[in-house]
Length: 401
Image 1 (cartoon, one colour):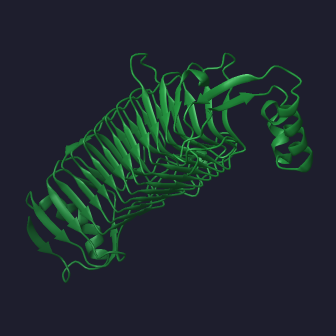
Image 2: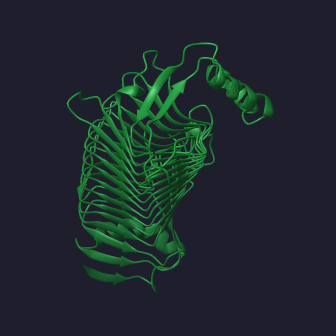
């Protein structure tokens, strides 16, 4: 790109008043190097162009109405900018950056603040969203905008972004995207998929959100190496699967959540399976919660440790037993390993006792771990008042984590 450095003639207010006119005048493929200072939005970029600021010093400030930067061309690059002060209308999707009907765009090392939505991609492909910090307006959680939103956008890379106090990170009707090494804090859905396929989600950190990762009406996706913690409250879920088919969920760590996994009618395609393997499911209220018809999942080599209840099924007709469990570690397994091959000599079988009050009444969880509840749990196992229901059998439980 041809470089146009504007350090001397257009500093301060005069330059900020002329930024849009200068963008309109420069040739396609030009590079604008902005000095430190505050420059006036709202701007529209409708040609291939590169705009580079001085990191932490170059601000493009919107007028408080609409979107600060609209990109309506392929091959646009924004780097090292602070972008702030969008409008606050949801129906217009007022954002820091809006990209529509474009390919091969890059947003890198930008800070987006006081913007309702952060980065909104609609029909955008083969683009990169890398190393950005995004926060919304100081609104209640449900009426903030999404930090990042993909809509009919395929084959993009979203890497190393930090979303703080935005609403959701949304992947809807979008396929073939790589979402890795992002951080999401104090949001609602740290990552939310709908009608999406063949995406890769790896090595992200999500904490203190209402929900970690939720896959809905989606298929053919891999989630690997993610850390999800402290998704609490009535909707608190680490990883959720609803009508999701042919997923591989492996080597993730889920801890301190109300529900580690939430599985609802998954796999949806009865000819497919989901593979839940090698995950650490630690210190959650419920390790794995089954809801509705969920069978044919391969659940292997996971660690269930420190959960108030490792597995729970609320579907009426127990479906958890119809999944394939093998080589999982269970912290409440009481068998032996006489031949020292690392596998228990007897199967691990988990029963549901209707007398477990805290499962029937969540308010009793407050007393979980107290001497009274511990004694009741012991008595229910020793002499149950009702016939127990089998939740699962793991024929080859691991003896060690």
